[in-house]
Amino acid sequence: MKAVRHSWLGLLLGLAAALSCSPGSASPLERGVLDNRLVVVVEQNTATNLAGVFVGFRVGANTETQGRYPARALLQEHNRVYAQKLLDTESHFSPLAAEFQAGAGIRFNTEWDYVQVRATCTPQNLESLLQFLAQVFRSDPLSPELVNSARQHLIQHCSAAERSLAERAYYLFRQAMLGKVPPARPVFGNPEAIEAISLEELTAFRRRYFTGANAAVVIVSPESAEKMGQLVRQSFGLYPKGLPAEPLASDPRLPRQSGVRVGSNTSSSSAIMVLGVGLPPPGGEGFVVGQVLHQILAGAQGRLRRDRGLLHSLALNLPFQLLARRFPIKAIPVTLESNPHLAIYAEADPRAIESARRAILRHVDSFREGSIRPEELARAKQRTLNDMALTLQRPSALAAHLGKREMLGLDCTVSPHQAAQVAALTSQDIVQIAEAYFREHYIGVLLPD
Image (cartoon, rainbow, N blue to C red; front, side):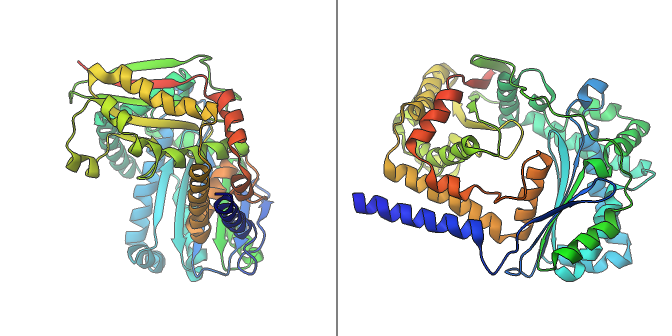
């Protein structure tokens, strides 16, 4: 058994070294700031023939108190609609449109404290892509027709999300964990609030936050760092400097004990539950612990699937064929955000919700007790490193990862994946983090009327 452990360790350390260095394919990250305070992060990567681009804007965490919380989502939906219009009507963007249709992609996302777009193109069209994105984010004045179209799209999306039991239970869980703060509420707002936003309010929001002081552009490309920086300067250098967005609260976790939020489920006879614990903020070893623990719980070889007693505690009596298509319990991936968490989603018979809660907590509490088999930990670490390696291999994914770190105020000049921390992680490290963070757990649950 000792020889097996040494084999695992050698594999993990070798992969960690490859992730950290990648000699001959990628140059060190370079980070700079333009005169308008816009941050530029570039990495020359000659191992790929594609360019990955991330553009993000911090939009403040306190705008809900000003009555404009859904403005970020509506404006981002407008950006998506406007982007499609440019691709359809502007002939000088035709090569870019052809690339997107051929498989390279562009994706707009709205987060709790920033908005972003990530895109992929060939290096030959990198200049066109940057000019395109700069125009998308600074279209002024806003078109009332496009805003109304975006409003209707977003209202339909929000209405669908409100009908999703999983979405509703997840936000109840966030409320139990964070309290009544903006990051605990749906990132897109609700249909009524979206409908109430005026064109004037949306224009004011855009001019306030879509400025150089709140922006970051990240590029991973075969082009030289000097050329990438010059292209960003040409496209985004004339953005107004503006004022920085309002800072996030230093510790939004208001509850200091286990909390529960309960909602009503009128569309099915099952109880829908999200149970989880908070994690340390990203950037340190504690966040890496959460990523590894997710791998211990998740997947076909994870604890949740292999625990037949847990499945029995859900009391759903689901046929085996159905379980192969939709398993009633799963671990939610640990994502890079201001308020990370390790959480588990489950469907249960309403009469069995308490036994299901206890069964799930047995797994959470086991991490505090250090009951992790060496081979189980090694497998989870390998899967975590594999995910990191996949991110490094895709320019747009790496650009997005670096961009998220920049948006969250994390260091982008060091290895972004903490691969060495994963390889060196021990069961004692897990116990230490679990003891500090897992004593309090939070639940969002929907119960049938």
